[in-house]
Length: 475
Ligand SMILES: Cc1cc2nc3c(=O)[nH]c(=O)nc-3n(C[C@H](O)[C@H](O)[C@H](O)COP(=O)(O)OP(=O)(O)OC[C@H]3O[C@@H](n4cnc5c(N)ncnc54)[C@H](O)[C@@H]3O)c2cc1C
Image 1 (tube, rainbow, N blue to C red):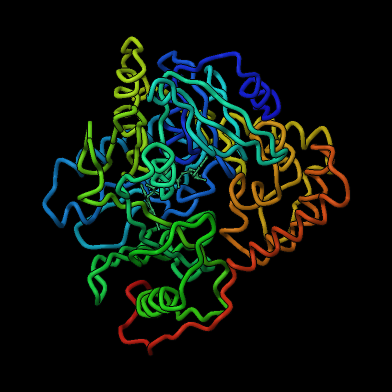
Image 2 (cartoon, rainbow, N blue to C red):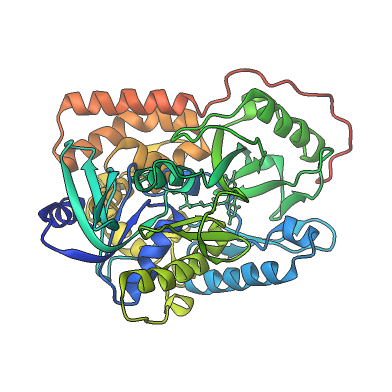
């Protein structure tokens, strides 16, 4: 996927897209895939990088929802479990079953980030912000966009606009109705990443009820252990949320009670925070279509807002919002094919080298490039299972533009080991600069910016912890 050619198409202003989606997280990308797979002409703009927001900061579970089970909401759990089954079939390289240690439950989990939009008519641009709406006769007819790499502003026209901006949905709704009521409130969840040996064996762990009634997970992920999460209400929307000391303390307390041995602050490889957009009961306005898990609101000037839900249900959310958008845009209804649509890269991973398995069918191309140029087979850092050939693949095929794009999302280096990611930044910056034809000043700025950001993912302040109370659940 080439950002430059996509951006030229957006800037040309000569076409009216059927649908324009603002926000490149799970919800927006899922909607773009659904619409494109139905044959609609779709554009999507993302102000940062794809999945820069909440979508890269989840617990990595494809699941039914413990709290809905607790509420006896079986139909919602059934629907999420149905989606989980579809994901395991349509993205076998990204989602996989995982047993949980917890009486009477079995759970599934896995990492998944990629979508497959390359075969369809969807024009995508990262680092392209929506800075206003275009209206004709009082109705939304497109957006005003800004290319954040050049500062250029331009209008993109579309028959309908979908606001899928996560915790920022209200900022976009303000462009439409400056005096409108906010629709979401924001809650923060934090995870700590520990070395894998803190939970030996192949199972994940679920603590169904902590002392204060929360659910806590310890999930094996890419040879590390992700432990979380918290639920801190009413935090401000932010592109780079930070863990609070009390959130870190809460997780450390429980990790010390339940893991094989007591982690200390120096064991923590990374700390990351994510923000949940929670739909306010009184704020949704003219809610057009609802499931109890996600919300679709359509304003009087026809801005469509999609929010709530979870990664697990992104496909169903996308199907629902595109059904609504077809109506708003006056498009002929076409049924969603995504229930049986293989996600880009879907392949039997059995024969693929382990560290390349989540690329699925793309792994062959990456392996071939490293065979052709053995220098590319060198790791970017001794503690990271990422090779130089992968970095080039991300720039050439997956629209990686910055060191952060490569180290935080195309690979999970920042999430898995923040210190190693900081140390790898200069080499990754040089690889990017060569591909993108950038100069030394750009390299220096990239290293400086990434280091400043990644320092926020290191555990600095010692967290308050209480002494270990229980025997370990996992030996
Ligand atoms: C701590 C935590 C743990 C979670 N764990 C799980 C889990 O295990 N399983 C699960 O199924 N779900 C989980 N979830 C929920 C799941 O992560 C979210 O439901 C999902 O990622 C939301 O995706 P989104 O696309 O709506 O929002 P986001 O991923 O935030 O995407 C919105 C995007 O819009 C962009 N944007 C904002 N304003 C503009 C603008 N003006 N112009 C252009 N772009 C803009 C942002 O940069 C952002 O990338 C978890 C959530 C949290 C917070």
